[in-house]
Every structure is written in structure tokens, then in C-alpha cells.
Length: 271
Length: 324
Image 1 (spheres, each protein chain N blue to C red):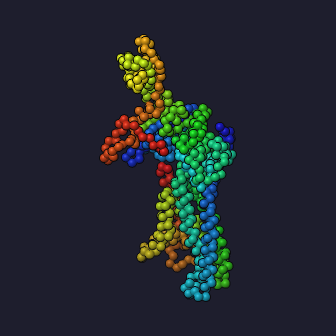
Image 2 (image 1 turned 120 degrees about the horizontal axis):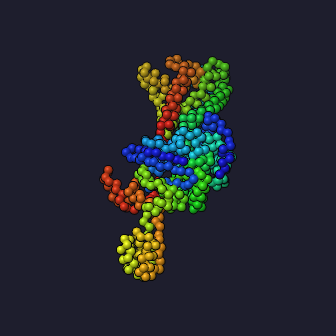
Image 3 (image 1 turned 135 degrees about the vertical axis):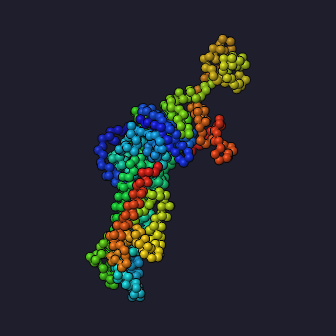
């Protein structure tokens, strides 16, 4: 056999090898690229639509609606975020559960028998991809939205908190994607993991808000999505327990714990 | 070199691998044989570090698989027909594997040509036939030019041409001094491929010897004799301690006495013999006999109460051809 080809090559450091391999994995499944592209277009389009409709009916809008827009002019990023968060979570889930359902996980573990670096490389590559996607959606939505609302509410990236909220939208999307990856890694089964992700991201955060008393307030505030979304708002609402970066930190902590659990279980379990 | 020492793996109440020890040496094809559920795949998974043993250890070249740096350059494994994401092309699948080992891109092209997948390399693996998937799996196993190969049922899904190809490939790899460890439930396939056999049943070692020795030891060689004096010869053979079975007017099947001795007996008694054919036992026959007591899934006709004797007795086993 062709021993020469194999033996004569210098081997680059492990991190570089694994990052390249995970990039090849994620970029070589066409459906991933397609769903990301569709996601970007629909999120921006949806955002423009909602903002344009709101502005078209500005004269007839209630005082409360006007007040909420004026209170946080970056609020028009909400529809884009709402549309993007679940698909990205699911993409994060599928990134790892599809390895289990197709058997690729065995090839991965045979290639990288110390399994933690493989998961770390996967998380890093996915974080980079979702960060780019998240920031593209956030900045495009902001810049177009800014033009739509400028006659009624002038807003600029240099206004206090605005740049942080726009960048934060991309960051929050990134963390949500990684949260999905962590949950997928723990659960391993696509259907079950998606159910849990939707439960955590959508259902739980709204349910907890309904809890009575200060306990409910505290529980709700520290849930990953409720805490993480704060960074996407230019102005701090009165009564928020956490600041924007504190909230983002809480969401990151949740994600880190889940990814840590996924890494621990990946090493413990048979594949 | 693969060394398995006192390896055990338990799944619930069942011991899938039970205190198994054997060594697979380089330079020859070692067959890994056993009935369904005997623990072949589990053993391979333990050797490859995919599953954790409950006891004992398995080492390749003196090291546990988990401790290998760039493992695919040392060990190549084919576990299932498809361990590939259906949405990824063959070439990209091999590409990411190569990247984890720091192998150059051209190595991917080399193994694709080696297994004859050039024409479909850019196509999504989801559309591959079982045979094409198997070739892709073999390409992945050979990617790092490994010294040790573990192949679980490699002929599964291959057409006759593919079977001959993999057979020759395994022999060539062994001749190059590599360690080739191949599991199969196709006993005839092992008879023509394997130089050495490791036979297990219910997770335990049943035999570890050369293929020829295994057949000699575990099958009763028979001699077919055709003679017009069948009655007379039968008496002589029985007197010598052989078992005779009358299978026709002038045909005897003799067990327990060598063909030479039968020839001598008939010559001394001046009996005419038309035909005297030693019939070597087949590997299949030897295997059936050996594993009769260790069948996991015998052909039970009655359901049997829970926890009752799963006695396999001497019933002919039914082999599931689809999986192990």
C-alpha cells in the first residue's frame, strides 16, 4: 500500500486538526447550509415586515404601543430573534444527535478516542458559525429597520446601549445554539432533545413568569432565555433583577453546565 | 498485535463477554467466529474503546485504544455498513476523518481508488447501496495505512465480485505483515480466508487454533466407500471399531477409521472396491458441533416459561444471515 503518503506528512497540533475536521463536517452537509441561508433571509424579512406594518399604522397605534417602541427603539429586533432562536437551537441539537442517528459518532470516537476535544472543537466551530449568522441577522435587521422607523423614532448605533443590543442579539443566538448542542449531547435522541429545547427556550420561560411572588420572579429571571434576552434590549426595564451582561453571563453559565454535562456523559457512555 | 486479557462486559443481567482472553498476531488473517449474540461485535467494540469493559482490558500494540495518539494511523476498523451521515459525500466523509489524523488530502483520493469508488466519490452517501457503503467503510479503515485492522462482517452486502475482492485484500494486508482480525458468521468464508480462528460462544472462548486444526479437531472425518461386497466390508470395519452407515446398496459411509486402513482391510480380504473417498469435515460442520452448547438463539419451538432452561441441546441452529 501507499505507506509513503501517510508517513511522510508532518502532523499539525490537535486543536487545528479537530477544528478543521469539525468545519468539514458542518460544511459538508448541504441541508445545514441551506437551512442557515433560509433562516437568515426569513428572519430579516420577517423583521422588516413587522416593523414596516407597525410604522404604517403608527398614526392609529395606541399610546401604550408607541410608548413601548419609544422606550426601546431596538425592540424591532425582537421578531428576528424570535424567528431565529428555535431553528438555531434545533440546528445545535441536530449537530450532535445526527451523529448518533447516522452512526457517525462511532467514526468520530474512533478518530478521537479522548472524546472531550472532539466535542469542544464541534462547539467552537458551531459557535463561530452561529455568531456570524446571528450578527448578520442582527445588523441587517437593525440597519434596515432603522431606515423604516427613522421618521417616527430616530435611532442610531451610537445611542446608549444600542450597539450592545445589536451585537448582543448575535451573541444571544450563539449561546442558544450552543445550549441546543449541550442538550442534544446529553439526550442524544433528536426528537426528545428538540422537545426539551423547545420546552426550555419557549415554554419554561413563559411558565416561570406566571409563578406568583418573588420566588417566581427570581426563578424566571435566572432561566437561560429570560436572562440571556436582556443583552438584546438597549434599555434596562425597571424591575429587572439582572443587568444585560449579567443576564448574558447567566445564559452562558447554563450553556457551559449543559456542554460540560454532555462532555462528561460522552466520555462515560458507550457509543 | 491485539491482546485481549480477561475481558468482560455486562449488559444488565447478561454477560455479553465473559472473561475472554486471546491474542491476535500480525502476518495472518485471524477469523473471529461465533453464533449470533456470542459477543463478537461487543468484543470488537471493547477493543476499539467504543464501550467500556466491566473487567479486564484490551490493548493494541501494548496500548489501550483510548491512549493512542492519531489512532487511525495505527488501527483501522470497519464496524457497520454505514457509519456515515447520509447528507455527506464519500469524499467529504473521508476528508474530515483524514483531517483528524493530519493526513494529506491526496490520501483520500488514494483510498477511494483503492476501493473502487472513484465514480461516486462526490455523491451523497445516503444514496449508496449496501455494497458501496461497505466499500466506503473499508476506505475509511484503510485511510491511515494502519498496521492493525478490525473488520466486523466485511462481506455483508457485497456482491460476489466484491467478496473475492475483500478476500484478496485481507490476504494481501496480512501478507504485508499487518494484523487482520475479521469477524464473520459465514463459516465457509472464514474457511477460505482465515489462517487462524478464534471461536467464541456466549462471550466465552471456545477455540483458538489454526483453521485446519479446528476442522480436524471438531469434525469427524468420514470416508465414502463403494463396493459390491458392502455387507462383508461393513463387518470388517465394525470389527475394527469404525462406525458404518449404509447409504446405498453398494455405498458405505465410514466414521472413525482412516481411508488407508479401510483399503488395507479390503485388500487383505480380497474385496473389490470401486471408490474410496476421504471426506474432510467442513468448517461449518465443526463450528455447529462446537457451538451447539452455546447458542444464544436456538430454534425453540415452544415459548418456554420465563427463566427456564434455554437449553440448546443438539438442535440444528438457525443462523440469521442479516446481522450478528
